[in-house]
Image 1 (cartoon, one colour):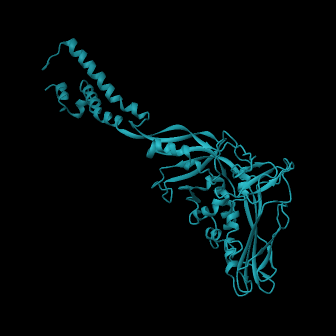
Image 2 (image 1 turned 30 degrees about the vertical axis):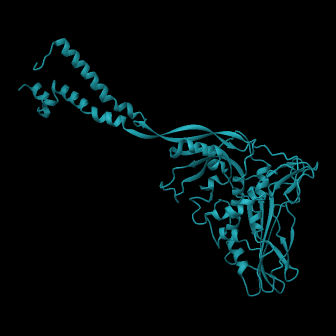
Image 3 (image 1 turned 30 degrees about the horizontal axis):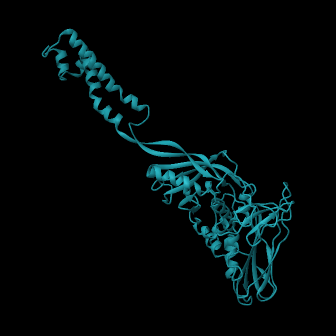
Length: 462
């Protein structure tokens, strides 16, 4: 049998395959043989991600103006003189008599922090640092607005794309460093068996005098009862450079634990929150001993803008604890509106107030802060600049309060990015076109052979 027919029947030897005309047959057979494989591979459906833009509602950065005593009081804003009562809010006064206020309403962030502190992660801060509205917040996204994962625009986006929505990105303000510093210092003095005076420690920044706070505990007797005396001061002895306004964003916190002779119950708790395993207690008259801590809070330089990503497909991906939503901060970004203003600073200054004054007038025991701070809990903390668990918890309280600032009607939509999963044919890469080569080559070969057959008048059997 001739060599060419042996090649046509694919019974030729290797040496014959490498010589013309059999080499030409080999190439044709190989190309056509790859046809099915390339078609199946090229057009097999695969999961792809496409980006869509949506309008996330964020703060506009406009400070609310409150003018009428009959209108609902915003959580923070400016108001004319004598418009807002001291029972409704805390206020800072301008030279012209108008005030900047922070309201005491139960709907405002400072009233919610006490309930949010138990969500702080005290086990593994590298996974997440706290939970808020179902999302695990990483240390790079502390203070991200709740609207990023539980707002009207996000819920509409989720309703539209459902489980296909895998992540969103938006430029939002976050807390980039801990505004709180806590040091052992200050003292308490018993004025009677149920009255005590707290004096803050020396403030190294020079913004504060040594502040005083007097407290009476009608249900306690210092000869045999432990007590905690805690307070927050919001008016420093200096004013800001602009408008003569008292420095919004500053506060001073005092924590004092007192134990009667023979007991160390409360002093151990406060020392443990400071990660002080060998506390040096101070004698208080003839009744007992004390441990006093003074904390300063300065929120004026701790905020920044980051591109925060909400991951919605984190379950089982090895991130850590399997929460459905994770918030993580990325690179520095520039927002459409600068929203970091006095509303942020006032909210930050008062963020811990409810937790500091927990059980005020009774035992003074800061149960919520104590549970989150733990006992001699060392680093790593949520903030890289935290030096003890107490200041770390107080700093996270700032982030939680800021995250829950309510949006006003005047707040504006912000262009944000969402990634959505979809099915597509092929891989969507350049390899798709390479896989088409065998099919196109086969088509060319068949056309050439067909034309030659027509021209040569070929018939079955040659």
